[in-house]
Amino acid sequence: MKKFPEDFIWGTATSSYQIEGAANIDGKGPSIWDSFCTIPGKIAQGETGNLACDHYHKFKEDIQLMKDMGVKAYRFSIAWARVMPTGKGEVNEKGIQFYSDLIDELLKAGIEPWVTLYHWDLPLALQLEEDGWLNKDMANYFAEYANLCFDRFGDRVKNWITLNEPWVVSILGYGQGVFAPGRNSNSEPYLAAHHLIIAHAKAVAVYREKYTHQNGQIGISNNCDWREPLTNSEQDKQAAQRALEFFLAWFADPVYKGDYPNMMKEKLKERLPEFSESEKKIIKGSSDFFGLNHYTTMYAAHSDGQQEEISVHGNGGISEDQDVNLSLDKSWDVTLMDWAVVPWGCKKLLKWIDERYDQPNIYITENGCAYPDQVVDGKVDDQKRVDFYQGYLKACQEAIEEGVKLKGYFAWSFMDNFEWASGYEKRFGLHYVDFETLERIPKKSALWFKEAIKNNSAETNNINKQ
Image (cartoon, rainbow, N blue to C red; front, side):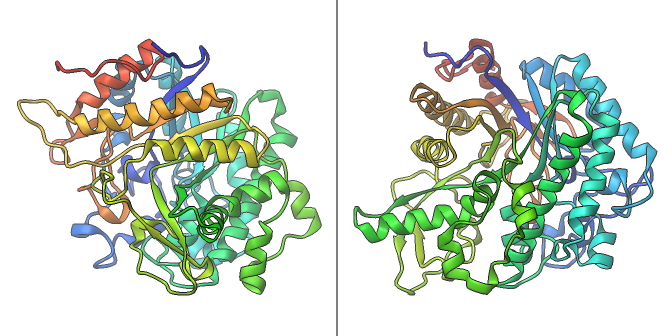
């Protein structure tokens, strides 16, 4: 049986707005998602995260389930508006207490907390009063918020992620308008992204200047799907490379190389903001590890300006800026999100990152799939999810064997939750949540994952008995 390295970190992940509920109790302020969910037609079935999984009240029960699974680490996010109701100034001590209790409970269970500072739920006051991420001042507000978290939790938290998927915030929030704050523009995504990158760097600077005694590490988690050239033509190979640069290098190049990719500068011209020399200095080298959220793969072809319609699920970004057409292979299985299951794409992406960014330590901070799970006789037989995890983890093992420094893997998600604009229909969890009763049921995939962790291997035999 092929094994992962001894110190490989097995984890699972969630985010605050998707699971916590308790939307307006104990002094929490509203976020842009609380507000966005009230707009008719934005969320499937008009659902909201007001209650979600009620993790706010059930976190001890949830941590026990994690412990039962044997996970070594749990990645969760802090709701900025829960600890700072207006995003700046006043601190909500009840919110601080919740996360403090959560962290203590995790440590008691032998589970390492991995904390994301920003998973899309910007305090609404900052959107209304400051224009959200379109305002450069956001970087300073974010640094102050980060400082509060390091100060209150850093004695126990040793792994920090500043931002989750700034690509999604920029493209889906400010470009396509399908996520909060719901703006449509072909220039605002580049401005929002610019400020997000500076905000990340400023938070890291605070951590490194004031909290080195805490002996932790800090980084950023970017999302990227693999882009495979549709044909062997030079044009399609260049299209695939462009697509990857517009997706991942947009955020990773500034952090690892000090600036945006040249190709983006050439194509976008004045729509792509410029970093000052002092900004480049604090941005370059501002990540102790490479956080990667990866879900799927698509073919990329050169488009000659002939744009084909891509669904939001295609995750193409602003396609007319890239001259790329994306497509799927008819033979690929797809999940409920219409995302193709292509484990070899994960391995290729890991190798691309390894090569482009000089072999950083990589953590897959999200990987998972949605399927139409059903409870039958008190059990959930999600064999397709088992196959998905096994396939992707085997691809990870191969990448490690070929020299990629992949240090850990966080399954998305610990439990079914509020899947943003898709509401509650798209289930990504290792645990089934009955959203009427809030009962949690470990799926077959949770039992398989437990065995994989125990054996430190993706070659764990399928769990056929529940």
